[in-house]
Length: 283
Image (cartoon, rainbow, N blue to C red; front, side):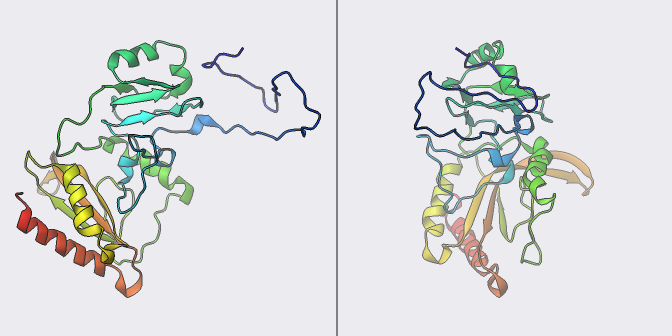
């Protein structure tokens, strides 16, 4: 039997056939299967990743969307490669270490540094991962209820290059005159950005749920979408000299309106959110 962690190396134009030892004359001649070139699959390609719920189901998009840098696994995320599937991914990175909470592969969850170190010592690791990056499993989730920044900023250029490569490196045309550029996003958006300071007892998940239940669930906001996360905004001295960054809660709002109506619903939603903050900002 072939090992589950091995590889077949075929010369150009070669092929092979496989069957279970029996032969059914009623079967046809089979189908032609073409293997994809896995050497060009990159860790920082957002189109290769999907968000799933704790039960393993795909999370519905609904009113929530995600900044492009957060569409690639963040430092406190769990990564799952489906069981009984093969993969090979390039982990080239500008980060010294790509941190993750856990990685599940070949039907096994690796959720501690020790378990991950054991996997790296085996023969499967170099077959699955190649490139100059280093993956590290920490086994720890985000320790701050106000949320944690994703941590993919240093590889933002890789994320955008992968995302826009299929469109010639060009962002889609927008109908608004002055698009906004959210932190962690590759292209401009038509909508609004709200940046919030926060206190140590701020709960990001509860506030996200509050915005969805109190506002986005209303029929008049049916076409609205929101992204909310903690980001680090770079500071400069006199607008030129880089200084340390500051953490902020970034809320990005976009709508699906066109023409002269573009932005009117967004403006109303921003007004409602700001009024809510004034009334309950310390709650």
